Image (cartoon, rainbow, N blue to C red):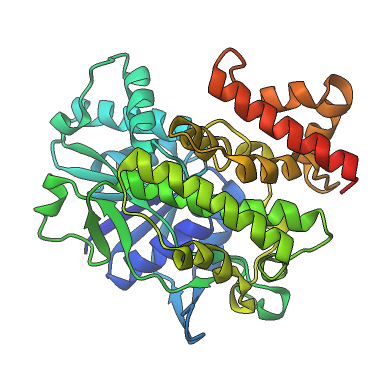
Length: 398
């Protein structure tokens, strides 16, 4: 039987990658650093995925029960061996996981060298991060202490992918005895960068769709797609809303998100030489959230906001890209300013932000949390736009 290793057993790892590999009759192993999750999955022995068509509302359910589990830390040797030998490996990780994942890949490469293992392995990198492949390569080289190391010469292929199903925890009324149930849309393919060696494989997973220029597609996803969700969410939270459909149907929140999306795409379009987007296509990025079928919590979308404030993430990344091409990111920075006024007693990051503002001022908070270089003209302008928008919001007492 064909084998697949899925690194990251969270919602996307289970709800998209696990479901797809299972449907293609792969023997699946989930690996994660979360011992409680890994132990729970192993004990329960199954989980379900509910996939709903975004247009028709028709859904189907899939039960995944034939899988193995590995604790990345506790079962480390077995995990490294699996990482070194499994042909198809797919990851669904958060940015804070990249360092350890790259270190583990470096260990797997050393294991392959020690045991003279030469089979080809394909690692599809899935995470919401522009420039992920080059970052992981840089980190692997650091751990191998070789700045010129070429993974592909050792038959280790690092390939970009876009893990883009909407994967959520079920609402209270949909919860069952299945603790690991995932609900979401029914996207049926994994978009994978068109690697020559991968394209020649005879046993390619049937849900892989190979595309050129996936770096651009990732920038579109994060910098013009995810910016919409976060923009709507921060604005809507300031008005006491809780769910995405409320935000998308709110005139102010949807308007700000729409214009943030326009600014972001204008920059990304020029950066990657993409075709222009129609106004209807821009509106769709907001209107898609009006449906209650895909109601999501604004608290979930804005969880760990400090990660979203970072230099390469949903706001600063597209803001700097827009400025690079002569586009003023007014609405992108305005929506981020709403992030700086957001306070939630159940979200530690927001308390950290408010304490920083109280003790050191909003100026320093923006500089530190967004990682901005005040000696750089464009980065200083982004800082000033966020600052001015924040001061306007505070003055208006929103």
